[in-house]
Image 1 (cartoon, rainbow, N blue to C red):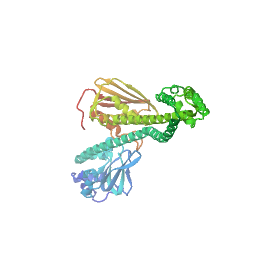
Image 2: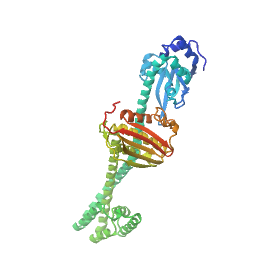
Image 3: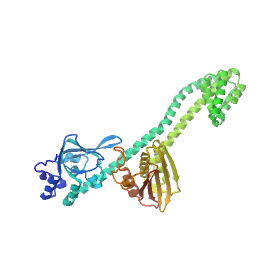
Image 4: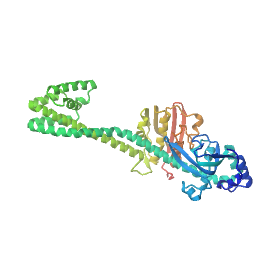
Length: 488
């Protein structure tokens, strides 16, 4: 490393980045840079490592990887100038010059490297420290003519990729939340349906046995009791636990004393419907002794079956509500631009993030805010970013406050968390691309940058932040006046 090979200046001229430079400029570049050779698998730099050098690829390949969701993914590959043009164009479809250098973006933004760079099959390159790189842009202005278009292309490409990744993260969060929320009603539905299958068979036998022994007046009595229980009215619905337990004991003893089969299951079902000793005594008084057990047995199975059907219906209603909430969050079946109630999107986002909010106390203060013309699905992405960040900051425990109000000609949405706060020295950096305070692999450094893009560029609003320990607030202002929204 560091020993310069012969003919280095001539080799630099073959690179598009330096093709228009004079011999003097090329000689300077050859003299101030550090020549490096990497073996296959050697790491040039790591993701989020503070950027220290600008690198020019002389030979071989560099593979760039980034960690998303705990998994390492290949972003792209740089292939040296000597590689045939068709292969260069084929890989990622990027222009030749974009293969020739790396590191300029984090150097210019005083940030860490966006990804990890790994030698693939051996790599030869020149390294220039930050001071030399900035000097290069001054001494060799021709370099900027190649570098700046590539830089702009890279920023746009990374933003698009980050947007896709944030969308995938959002879909992952949405899927995890839905799976969690759907698990209980789905399990209840499956359990009730399975139990109902057996109960229907038992009920068929019990009904036939009851039908063979019952008189017309006895049938009317049991039918009336069934209808009163089916209405859901009864003392068992409003009693406290101790009272209900006492009545359950009395009913079980009554059923046992009258030789009722399956007295425990039947007793539980009847008590849950509010039936007590008085009703059982009424049945015993109106039914012949030989018909009592078939009557109570049939009645108990009818109540059990109805309870199971209602459990299935309730689970279905919960699933339907989750589907409606999901559609509200994703704005399915709606126009991409429309007049929206901000609280609807905020509530849909909170519902989608409910599993993450289990340890968080959520306080809402929704003021009387007019409809806002917006891309609702994009605003929901902003709310998701801000609320998700707040939960991370509080480590899943604390208070989240969400408020809306009118402020002049704008609607103001304020999202506050009780976390430890953001150091004042980094507040101004929060919305810069690739800046993150999260651990490696947990944040792309583009969530807030994309949120600002959505709010300011797409909706003509602003997004600001204030922070002290225990009180971090993101303030999103959206214009109330109808306007033509940006289409890009």
